[in-house]
Amino acid sequence: MEEAFKYLGAGLAMGLGALGPGVGIGILGYGAMQALGRNPEARGPIMTNMILAIAFAEAIGIYALIIAIILGML
Amino acid sequence: MPKLGRRSKVGIIVILALALILVGAILFPVPQPAVHLSANYGKDTHVEETHIDETPVDEVHNGEVVEEASHIPPPFFKLGPIWFTNTLITSLMSVVVLGLLFFFGTCRMELVPTGLQNLCETIVETLLNFFQSVAGEASGRRFLPVIATIFLYVITNAWMGLLPIYNIFGWGEHGTTTTLLNSIAGSVFPEYEGFIVKTAVLRPANTDINVPLMLALVSFLAVEYWGITAIGARNYAGKFFRYGQFIGALGQLVRGKVKTALSGLFYGFIDIFVGGLELLSEFVRIISFTFRLFGNMTAGEVLLLMMAFLVPWLIAVPFYGLETLLGAIQALIFAGLTLVFATLAVTPHEHEHD
Image (tube, rainbow over all chains, first blue to last red; front, side, top):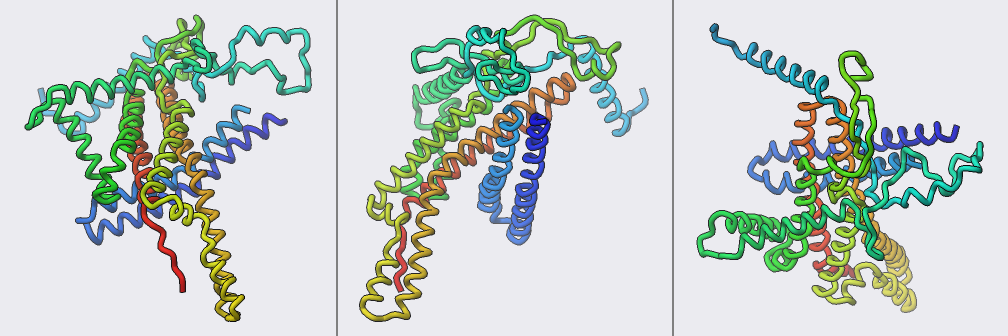
């Protein structure tokens, strides 16, 4: 019974934890595409800052992955 | 021979690829990989076989006995406090590779660079331009040694982990495992029968949690050091302990201006709280750096192993491309975030007094 809840928790942790970063990265991409469309010459700084911001958002998804891994190994 | 249109050419390539996959699955089955989420920091196996007489029925987790699925292999040998694991070997290998690359690139320097010297100069100059564009001329030049080393170390570890010698040979045992296609159609696709590797000798260095932890600690110490030496310890500590506005408001209260004192107290209190949060976020950054790099690299390694195990010979190729790109991006992100935090640390904090 305990094992079942552990695995269920692991699945829920990863699944629900991937919602936020997914939406966040989508919004970041939207903003970057808009900025690029307005000013294609500023491609360098726009892409650099977009990658940096995506790294921040993705780290939250990685935290959820770590929790799921730990729950699966307990 | 009739001239083949584009569609039939693509059709022929797809059929050839499928035939190659089928031939690979029939003739060369792949063993189920032993995926360990940690490098071999486990206990030795021979001390755990003493609890045969007592087998508690309702206890899920006995103290000494470890379950088979999560058994972490022991290290190769221990030299006092240093455990020689497979990731230690590969991290030393990437140090040697980087050292040799830059040594032979600069051993005979000419004014007009060619060949290896040109490559080394390109790497250093690109990084220097990137750092100077973010941090400014003088600061960019000052930050270059530590942050460029972090970048090159992470990218060398990540890209060397894609070579075919990693995760392939090691200690193991003879056995049989089923493959995926065998469990679907057992008569056509055979089982794997042969040597199964349980402990690989070489494993990508970024998948050991100690390497990202080390890099995060180095970046934390470097940022603090640059901040303190650039603007002075007092000024730097003043960014985190902002009692200025609060004490000024108390002074105004004593002197009798109650109205401005109250608003000053309120904003002063918020200022102290924000300073405390910034101090906390300096330390939480260590954990965030560690888990970002570790999670990305471990997930990538597990993905590649699973893809190679599922369908042999061709499906893993796009995932190799993804993993290459991901390694480069993670190195850039680690170095870039350290650079951004260092730039924030060396700018003096402007006190706003109204």
